[in-house]
Amino acid sequence: MTASTLCILGCHNFQPEVAAAIAAEGWSDVVSAEFPARCGRPPVTWDELRALLPAACSQVVLLGRACLNRLGMPPVDFPPVRIEPQDQCFHMVAGRQMVDEAISAGGYLITPAWLADWRGQLRTMGFEPAQASGFFQDFASELVLFDTGLDPHTPARLAELQAVVNLPARRIAVGLDYIRLVLGRLVLDWRLEQVRRSAREQNRRHVAELADYVAAMDLLTRLAKTQTEPDTINTIEELFRMLFAPAALHYLRLENDAEIPASPIPDAILGALRTLPGEYAWTPDGQGFVLRISHGDEKLGLIAVEQLAFPEYRQRYLNMALTVTGICGLAIANARNRRRLLEAEKMASLSILVAGVAHEINTPLGVGLAAASTLQEQSARLADNFAARRMTQSELTHHLAVEATSTALIHQNLERIGQLLTAFRQVAVEGKVLDTHAFRLRATLEDVIRSLGEHLPAQHVAVHIDCAPELEIDCVPGDWASIFINLIGNSLKHGFKGQEHGRIDIRIARNDKNRLCVDYRDNGTGIRPEVLARIFDPFFTTDLQQGMGLGMHLVYNLVTHRMGGTIRCESAPGAGVHFHIEVPPGKAAPD
Image (cartoon, rainbow, N blue to C red; front, side, top):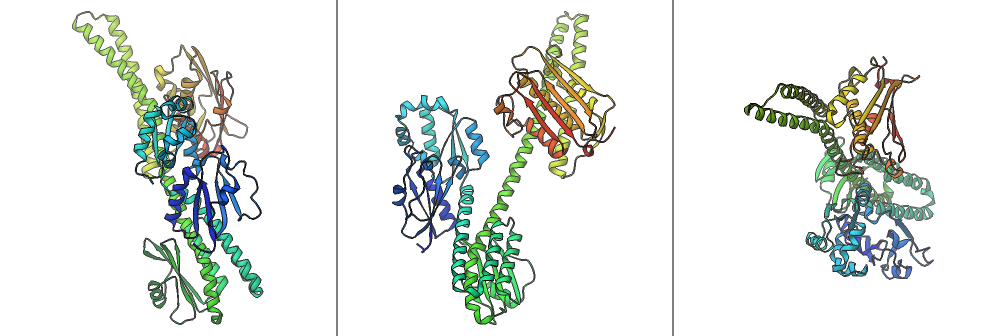
């Protein structure tokens, strides 16, 4: 154990993940310990925590939620404490959105450590396993396991618990990446503070070097805030030039043991970099030094400082460089982790895009299938009557009318699917901006209403359009068709649910600033405030059996991101809904 140690204390249910993340990162100066998982009943005490601390602990980090609520100020003889309260304890192992969505869906969240002793956990809650089913079913709709992959027996234990509480179970594989990022930030902050404290001590001993140390701390702060690896490397080079004023500085980037030089390196220096026996060595002429920058066991880069301005102080310079290489390595590793996280987010965004296209295709496909089914039934009935010589002229006339209506619906909705697939191909495959052209918005809206067919029965839903027939805009017609399909679809699925009659009013015009304004209203049941606040969130829906919760999110993205406009929704229970959309002139050309 090193003289300076960071001690991370968390509850039993997350201790295996904390310990595994520390081991994976190779932090020899970071230790962890656990306190009982009582969720604040009663809260932990400082005396309990004191018993968990190692002798050389220089700072304590407390992770928790309800268990820390009544902890109060630490005793004066306690090491420095940093309390990291969590909105939800599971935010330590998975993203906030993933955890909050699982909770909102009625899930009871569990970890592998909790599951390892689930029978004891139930008894702690006051239940024998045979009595727990009713309790869980009163407030939870499913069991959600955030599986970090540390315990191979977890799936079997989850199945045992599921059988006891009689609830569906879902396993979300989260691994250790997220908690490694969470702890990495804490360790980076702590180590940066260690470097600052060490630097301040050196400044007191070496007053003559005060200016250099202050500038070095400023650059280290910048280093901690860098977002990309090139920016981090540039800041490291600036730091080394400021501290040592070398005649030349060379950096050799390493990734997966492959060399990626940013600029040509002299052969002699390149050889010294490649044959570096340990953490450092002197350059061939003895007037500089070579350093390895690493994070844990991973080699991230090599840096060579040639011809120091004051070679007589080379040992002091080397010691100074070794002090900051740990922070440099952590900053580079953090930048690489951030890059990997962004790549993962891009993949998640692609998944949402694919789900969105499937959501858009669902409505025209359903209308087309319904029309085809109607046509098939009518044709079979007519064929039976013809074969039995019972067919009448009125039946044939009715069949032809149904055939004309059904084939028109099928044709319109197949065209709509084709347009959606073309748009998807342009964005996802070609990577090009969608083609725009001038079209009349009222005609597009009327086509949408016709395409909905029997889903929008005139005897039950009255649609009133207030839009000049000659109003023409330059945009992507499919975008506006998607907007109107989702707005009308929401009214039909949710607004008019349980009502015999409904009314939709759509007013489209330009305001005095030439902005295109769309006002959409219905006289449906309205929206509760807590639902209204999340209406544009992805995957948020009040009826999981009627949709995926992507419709209004797609409308929001089309209006705000694609068109650069604004959209707001006003509603209250029993007062219907009002959507107001404004699009700037650049996205909707003048008449």
